[in-house]
Image 1: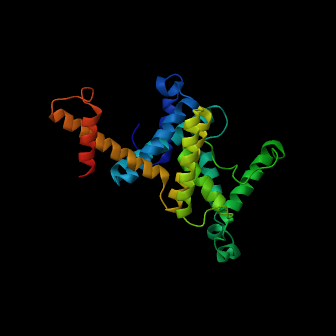
Image 2: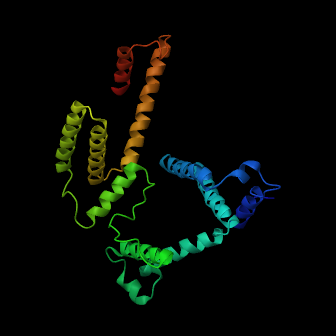
Image 3: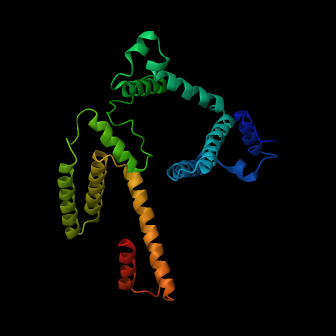
Length: 269
């Protein structure tokens, strides 16, 4: 089997890998749950390539992510749920439906993208989907209930805040949020003084949520900011290792004061 630019070849390769008799044993034994962590990992590797502006890696990582879509679609096809064609049809239908100002009739195109249209269309889709599942709804649906729970917590906090802001539930500017952060720090201190773990965890979460809100008003993505802080920490810690190695010491042999001095020296550069 030769490589190809045609998606049909990738679908054929996955079908061959999943063949119970002649396929790859590892691929055959996988299911949706076992593959899901790889799907998430590949999405993050795409993001990493974008942040490094590495187009060669981005091409490879996008291919790896596409493979995940084909893998899940193949497993769904095997159980009779849907196939890759259904996935493509679903997303093309959604994009056309959500862009009436581009793909709609002349009146819709001339009207343009009205404020709130995207959210209204999404809400209508979800309502129709719930009705199609059981002929009705599961009861009242909250404004924020369509936010994916599986998102990373910082990203979900950002999206919850942004959606609430669309209906006016928001701070007018960034600076008052600093006061809110100081308030949350005070409540965290109080919880720590009382020594109640549940209260400490709750107040810590409130503090993180307030910090995300500040970042949103400053137009800073919390995930990106934390990744930058992670990279900075790693770089400075490596500098500690190099400094200790130059002295003939390991991390285990060094004292905290010595490591702190090396950290500060790297920080001051």
